[in-house]
Image 1 (cartoon, rainbow, N blue to C red):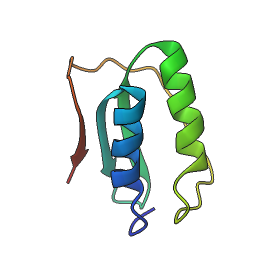
Image 2: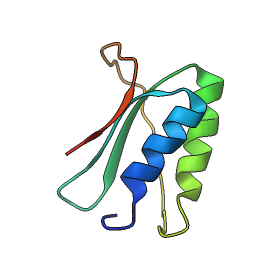
Image 3: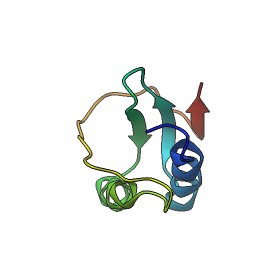
Length: 78
């Protein structure tokens, strides 16, 4: 999903939900989001990610629990 503003939209959404982490485009056209937060917050964040911005058509989201280094912001990785 490239060229539809999904990463910038995700960063704004993360700030609204007070979620830390990052978002990046992958070579296959998918977007990877790594997020840190409590379960309820991440659940709400994930639901919004599935809706996506008006310019995007999100087909599916795959979620997995991972370990991330502590961070205090949410960045777009280029």
